[in-house]
Image 1: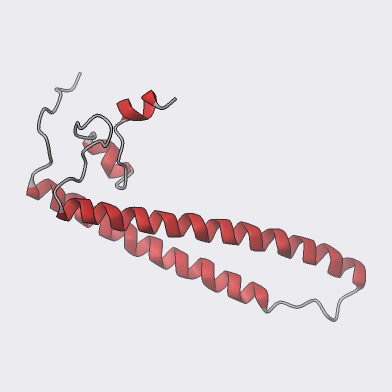
Image 2: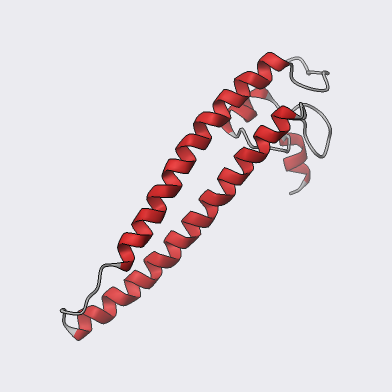
Length: 128
């Protein structure tokens, strides 16, 4: 069993390591967001004016569903980007990695996987 970390915050070197992870994820998330937006805009240009009425009805239904899915995907991506930017602010404030419920340090491995996490596994389990 791993020793419990009784520190109240991560040291500056650790914070810098997390910052690099977050900056990489943020760059990728922003590229992905741009792709989602481009796909959405390209989808708006695909008309079905010259196709049969039946096929057009099917395609419009599919297009509507695709637009909704794309909008949901874009909204999730925007939230992810916002969460990552908030994590960078917490790094600057030296409050990064501290559980907002328990006040204990969030496990390093969890932060590497979910760098925008604000809850420890313990606090997450209390919510259930």
